[in-house]
Amino acid sequence: MTTPPRFVHVVDDVPELEGVRPVLVHALDGFLDAGHAGSLAAGSLLGEQPGRVVASFDIDEFYDYRARRPPMTFAENHYEGYEAPRLVVRLQHDDADVPYLLLHGPEPDTHWEAFCRAVLHLVERFDVRMTVALGSVPMAVPHTRPVKLTNHATRPDLLVQENVWTGDIRVPSSAQALLEIRLGEADQDACGFVAHIPHYVAQFDYPRAAATLLEQVSVVTDLVWDLEGLRVLGEEKMVEISAQIEESADVREVVRGLEQQYDAFHRAAADEAPSLLAEPRDLPSGDELGAEFERFLAGLDGPDRED
Image 1 (cartoon, rainbow, N blue to C red):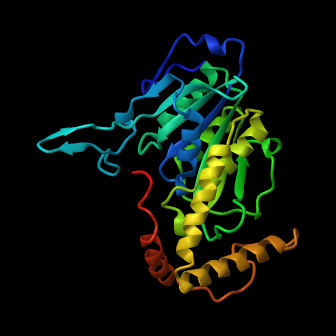
Image 2 (image 1 turned 45 degrees about the vertical axis):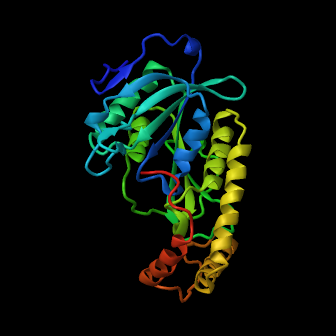
Image 3 (image 1 turned 30 degrees about the vertical axis):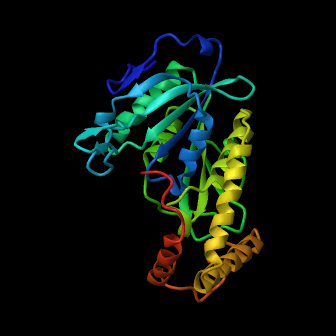
C-alpha cells in the first residue's frame, strides 16, 4: 500500500467496509460540471442525511480562493455564515443498503498529481473495485432530445456503450480525467460518463442529465437508487425552458436547427466518420448565438446555485 499522502486524512476504522470491495463514485464541481449535472447527481446520492466522512483533503492545498470565492453573509454590520469549500469522501449506502464511497467537492485547482496520488491511496486503502467518474460538458445539442453520454474507461471491456463519434479529439484536461489515467497506470479499474448538455442552458441546473448519469452508474456497478425525484425535477426544468423558448422566434429557429443536426447525425451510417455537424448547414455564428441566448437566458430564473 502506498504511504498516506500528506494532503489527505483517512479514518482508520470503517467496519462497514470489512470484507467489502466498494465502488468509488466521484463528481467534482468545476470544469466538468455543465448544467451542474455531476453536482446534482452527487446531491441526490447524499440526500438529506449525508454519510460519514471517511477521508478529507486539505482544501487549502488544492483550492484557488481568488478564482472561486466561497460565499459568506454580511449581516448589517458584521460578516457571518462563511461556507468553506470541502473535498471529502463519504461512506454512502444505496437503496439495497450496499456500501459505496462518494468523492465530492470542488475540482482541485492545483496539485493535480498530489490529488491523484491521494485518491490512489484511498483506492488501495479501501480495496476499491472500481472508480466511476461523473461529468458533463456543453454541446451543440437540443434540450428536446434524449441526453447523450460519452463513456470512457481504462480498459475496453469496462465500456458499456458506444460513443457517438470515433477517432481522436484534443480536449482540455481536468483533474478527473488525469485521475483516470493515473488509476489505469496503477492497474486499477476506472470508468466514467460525460453528459452532453445543451450549451444554451449549461449554466443552469439540468436534472435530466444527472438522472441519466446515475442510470448508467447503476448499469456498471449494480448499485440502485430511486431517481424519481431527479426525473421530476428534470421534467419541470423542461417545461420552464420550453416556455421561455416559445417567446422567441429566433431562439426557436436555432433550437430547430440543432434538432435537425442532432437527428441527421444519429441517422448517419455506422461506417461513416461523423462529426458534430452531420451535414453542411448555415448555422448562426457564435456571436449571433450568444446574443440570442443572452436574451433567452434573461427570461429564466437565476442560476440555481453559486459556483
